Amino acid sequence: KTILAFEKNYHIKYPGYVNAANVVKSYHVNAFPTFYFIDREGKVANVTVGYSDGFEQKATSMIDGLLRK
Image 1 (cartoon, rainbow, N blue to C red):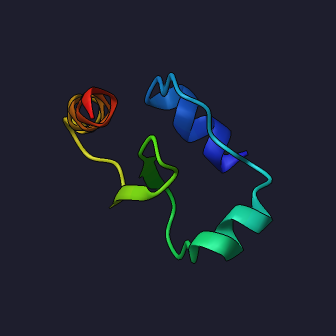
Image 2 (cartoon, rainbow, N blue to C red):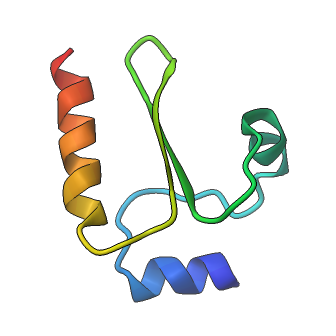
């Protein structure tokens, strides 16, 4: 419920995983929210922990950069 409320409150427009126990274990997540940016080769290109002002702009820039590669 907390994650869904957070996404709604901040108008998050990308998918989140609520029941992601396997993902949490595999990626060693220790804080929420944690954002993993995956490149075209399937490698983790960037990890961002937390959500702050300007996050969407930074995330968009990161994604655009990864898509250009």
